[in-house]
Image 1 (cartoon, rainbow, N blue to C red):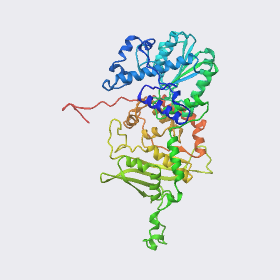
Image 2 (cartoon, helix red, strand yellow; image 1 turned 180 degrees about the vertical axis):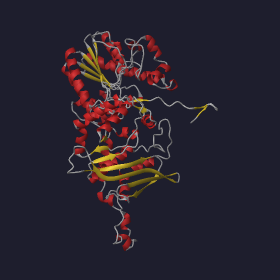
Image 3 (cartoon, rainbow, N blue to C red; image 1 turned 60 degrees about the vertical axis):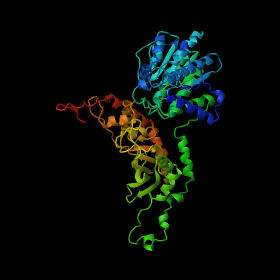
Image 4 (cartoon, one colour; image 1 turned 120 degrees about the horizontal axis):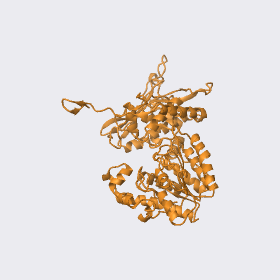
Length: 593
């Protein structure tokens, strides 16, 4: 296993994969190799010398990576990329030499680099360089490139368009080149691409093509950007779906007796590294054990939840105050005692204990807040509020405001005889008043202060509340686009039409940050072909805990209706309208803000 990813995010992903494999006892230090830098003469087997020379200029690198030339550290970046290219070359040579049947480079897959130019974060094309190196060494068997990154690999399509000895197979959501060749099989998928649709395409096209071509070697670009929620992707494949893709490719290649070289390709979501970890684990053990992003957090919260005494969560020290009069202690007989517990279970003391046990108090203190205090406002059954304040710089600051209620959840087609009781989150504010907005933390619609950075932790806390109270679902009402997009794909809208609408919005807003996308929606810039703004509409967004809820969202009927709705919205010509021109005051020639 070669280890040297190229960019910052790739390096982090590679380190996470290797670290977790070692932690699990599946990998030893001797199993991981750091490859040599690809020599410039090696790069020249694929790229022209004129391009190689220009690739060392800050302006070229800045164009390829979409950054400012002044921010480019040429030597560091060039060494990193050359090492990643060297990793793919070394992996391929080891497979062809018969040292291994499969080799993994935890980096590479730079498929947008053509012989005369780089693009899309790809300065040099490692797979192309490796293929030309093998040919120079005398390897003459057919070679196949299976490119399952969500973006078409124009570099390999263009470079090998005139040979019938290198075959490119690609399934992608965006087209980067119109180059065509009878030796290539390139499939462009649009709209809501689910696990079922994606796997059906692979089974009916990839497997027969492999059997017919019988390549001696396969390069597999295992892109993680097909994952739902990837900020530069448009597919809606789940983590298990990506694993099934990787497993199908591996077994199909093995069945035709070909060697296999794996590179990481693209991946721009928090879960990207998990796809590579799960695949590497499968290659090492042959077992289907999937790690998800929240496993560590979930394990921590589960452990804390088990340690919490239910009586401690309900205990109210104020009820034990011996200084209370009998009337204050027992309440007047002519009226009911006031509500003292959130959801008829949690006392204020219990909420404080839970926040402490789950580590949330420590995280708030790490942000500069001491003496974290909880207040309950639970007079209304329909809107029970939890307020969390922290002291900083001698002032009290509101950090959390949570409004919840218990209530039934109605799902179409689900038996009403046993109603599903859910925890409805009417409002959740998490803010850091001490922090400032910046380029790294831009203001999101609806924000007065930057976020507290504890959204996922509070979701886990709310899940534990649901389980402790025997509730079948957690229901959110996302107020803005970024709220709904961040919760996807774990949460789903009950109405498949609304779910499909959001997925279509996310498809069009691919490549924009959460702040940018949400602001575009807020400003009415997301429009149909007729120019009608597509506004965000809050609706029931559900995380299912009850088996009936989970079956509803996993059903073929729900998924097919979501895909149909997604495609319908895309057919309406969903697009971004140009910004409104700045008005000019002709008398002063200054723009009106």
